[in-house]
Length: 239
Image (cartoon, rainbow, N blue to C red; front, side, top):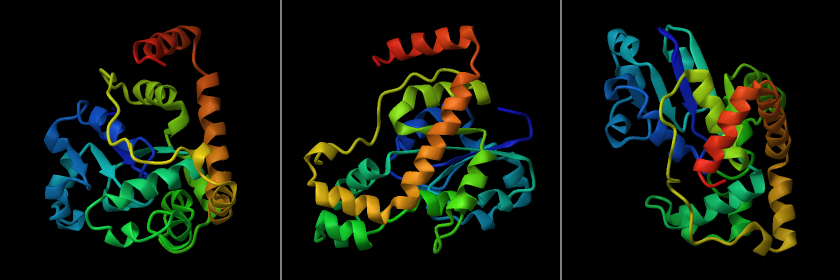
């Protein structure tokens, strides 16, 4: 945490962000966090806050598209977590089938969800590029280059360790939250459906590979002492 700098966690659905949120909330005072996904914040638009209230906020989290920093008049650091797109779409489908407010998904097959469901086609690219209509891959990559930390779900502990180093977070030990239990594993999904997901999420596949590259660069820059701390943390978390 840097004094006077706004830390923004872009929470892409079904990437492990709920667990990150639980850890984030241990690092800041409650009044210093604007959590868009909390019930009380859903009742109040960010634009309704006074400038003084905005100045008091040190961290923003939620299912925001890139660009939320324009609501604030202070320096900012983005960080996020992306997930292997095929696995994310499958997880999202089974999660939303049982989630209140998504009754339309209950009646959809996985194939239908891939083509026209919410939170499906190239959602990660849309969120990172900052557009709800056009998935601009190159803009998404340019935006990711400016993020303080870009992580991936498949390297969750490594990502979390980098976040701790970047923002000087305290205790980061955790128990996984919001896991979709009633779902098919990727290996159980027919290959034609896998290929359909890849077709409709080809930009996300590219962006995910790019994100992995950014994370690996950050991991390569760790000191030997940092690497030892990371391995100790992974052992403590059982990975």
